[in-house]
Image (cartoon, rainbow, N blue to C red):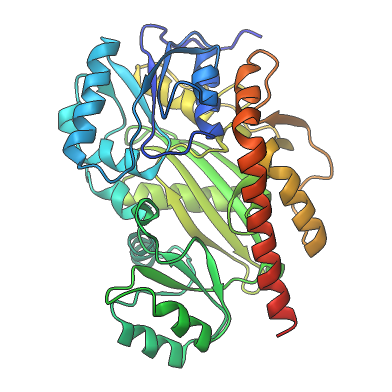
Length: 418
């Protein structure tokens, strides 16, 4: 079906990623989204056999394995080398915080080779990607967020443990810590002071964690806001939806979600991003706390979210298309979001579905039936990424999923039957 708008086919797009995570459906979605409109698409890939590298819409791949631990100067040099090889100004589409921060903080070196949104504060993306930085911004601008503490020593952990109301949640303070040896493996629930102090013994003299108020899943709902913010004074492209399942359950990436119109949440996100002067694509995770009736901001990813293809306006606009249109000087058509659209990540939604059925958890705002479904991997016009994903995922991926699930089940059973 021909779109109602025209992109500039002379301006390519480049998927930029730092680190080793070859099974990234968001990158595949972005390649398809712009590639279907005739935009030449390029991607940084871990090797020659990733799902992104297999897409029929990919014009060229740049095999560049990185860890996220390289000096910024080396990463900028490598990115500029890719830009010179493409040979014309290219829209950058980062898929992780490291790439988004690198682009924002080294805009001067990348200018001329690439097109990307610019903010007045080049450190804003790093601040938003940090759990502590985001918390500070929320407090400063009056945006609800869970109560949190940021202990800087074992003594501060002990003081927190003596006064805290348990359970609490521990997370790594900085997004970049997952590339190193993280203090905690992810979002970790801690039920009492004894458990906290036992964990803290492995955190060293400077704990890199945030200790956050626990929002009970039976009293909460997970909501998503995806948006593109262009130049000051322009109307943002903004979508809202509800997360039905995630993997790991209740604390991981989206496995299944629906578009649900939420004007209150959209207004909150719009005001916050305007107040901090954010420009570009944003992926925000909110949790609605039924106990006090407030939406609380948990995460702000200053880049495209992996599930961005959940959202497409009635004019065919998603956030990646909006950015390309804006950066190439073209008008972004305005239209509403179709209610009930569903997004499913095939390789993680089946284990998530089984886990959620066992828990009995449901999301009241989820529609009873999907108006349309977009799959993360399978597409009739681009089959190879799906089969490449299967080849890389089935054995090690399934084993890893089951290990995660069994570990969480054992933890839950210990809590229920101490």
